[in-house]
Image (cartoon, rainbow, N blue to C red; front, side, top):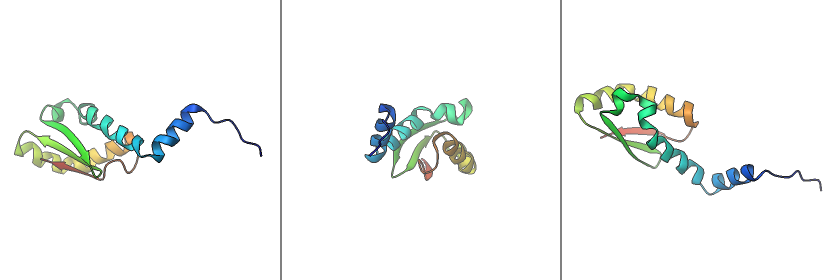
Length: 95
């Protein structure tokens, strides 16, 4: 048999994928990157709280902003997909 050597980074990446940690790390990064992702204007009225069952929960400081964000949800989901790839978040719930 002729096996090529595997780089440690590749091995670690595969291990993290196999045990499901890589997705959780990306989800935590999404929460931390929320202000950068949505911009300063939206970030001052919202807080990304957590991800549960691939749903991002965001606290919104007013009903007016909640309504606005419901209209912007498809755009925000697209930005998340562009940055993190498909399947990280399936929905956003504004609370």
